[in-house]
Length: 354
Image 1 (spheres, rainbow, N blue to C red):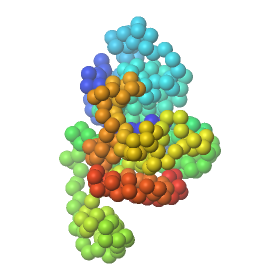
Image 2: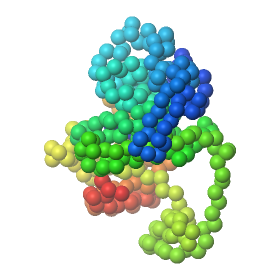
Image 3: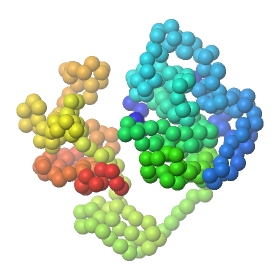
Image 4: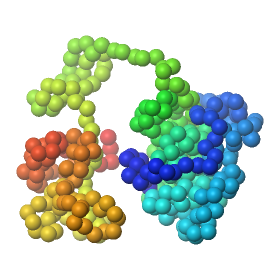
């Protein structure tokens, strides 16, 4: 699958020949949406040409102006679009990934549009990505992909989530998605044939048009934890995490690094808290990791061993979540003392359940 987050491969020079005439797209001008919020949701396009002009290249139903893009002709001449589509999901050649998925013909249309949107996001074309993800929710909310374990993966649900994430992450866009909800009845089993979709694609609203909600915290009525870290609940129902008595925003990642060629399945996984391949007295991942800036798989002189803890601190993380007992408590103390990184610890059940 993929991870949506920091656009490490974003290309500031990326652009589409036809970005569409408007942002966001007001689908009520081009389509009739019926049964919103029910299992009978459907859309009927009444103005194909107008909608195609509005959404731009690669976004349904505009599947033709992309062929006029000189970049497409360049990629064809350079043979950069040859290969299986699944090798074009996270490849470094973002231009090729975008065009490959926008032009795929042998895939579920919702999946095709989703990965088109994903590579627009990777390219840093955020408004275009929002358009494409939202088009998934409008046109293909029942579209199915399949995971590595052959379980259903709901494109519409994920698309709604990513529209909301991108609009929060890039507030300068100036819009929020409201009232959107795609609920899949029977969606927690592995049988897609019994799924029932209740669909409301919501609407994009200018942020300044939304009412500002201000609530007073009131009195603390419940406290869980100790003096160092605790959760408190106020009488207005809100919860707050406090660290040393001060409200704190948790900026955490789940952390369990695995070197290439080590696997739980093969019984070869080493403990990252103690694994020290070069015997320099420092665990490899947390204290010795380095950034391969030029992607040559070799540690060059200007690529210093700084460790994941230092990198996470620079990225703004203040916590890590681990799924097992600490085998190197001194390392975790160092994470907090030297890098201001706290540790959230749970068991393996917490790896799959929240």
